[in-house]
Length: 356
Image 1 (tube, rainbow, N blue to C red):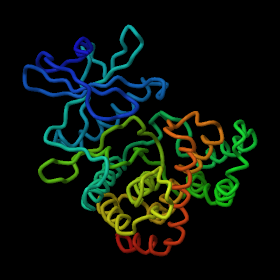
Image 2: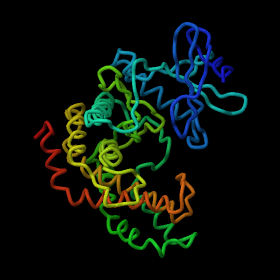
Image 3: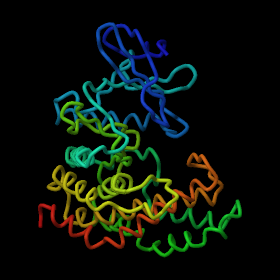
Image 4: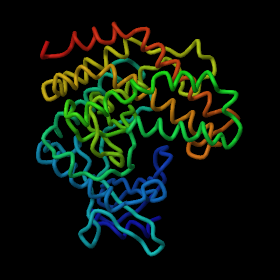
């Protein structure tokens, strides 16, 4: 891959280029040069992201905006220009490439080792919201159209139920009933957006811990990475996706549903960190909808897994029969647990909001 390094204005001559990390979408390499500089170089998956130029315009606009507000190099992703002065390169095979400065003295965790790690991810994503509060979100491109349009996800679920292309609907009537019973509520936040009650924000849309870089010495948040899904959205959805993934007490595909609950201590830690970083920039309505964001992102994800199962497992990679159904069931169990803990969830948000 050293030949691909020639596309970029790296400081020094590249002396090694090796696969790096465990990402499932883009192909990532660590590039080292004879000047002692390290870089991240990626081949962008243009089958997942159909409009790479639009995606890169988003990333360039957002990182440039953040750079003005944050002079510390390790706290913002820094794109490396190509030899032609662009922020990405398309090679002769039609593949797209980009490069970033490597964030030194940092670590990235797939799951929290202690609750403080989850707190720091909340600070990072809250800080992301805070710093981009004045960015004109409507100028960004939708890299994945209707990504968190929950009513649209239900439209696709109903179509999959109607088609029943793989004869699976009969065996999942309980799951279908669970989803459809919550269909009207699932439109709550999109309805509020259309009514102007919730503002459009710049959202990350993949707010997992492994998209936050932590300082390896202090274990405090440095910056948010993986900006491919940055686009217009709702702050509550970014908050909610973190809770869906990070506050669950079990794996996303756990078969023993007795192990699946939403951890209130983890939820509280995240609320505290998130609102400490951006609570003053969110509207009262946005803060009110944080618990709903957690519930709806979990419900939406379950609906997506159920839709894919009914459609023959065509979107999410599966590793065993019924894998998507197992994933659906964990999400719906989390939703039910959130409903059981709803008053506690709202009380925790009230405890940490600054406009109370």
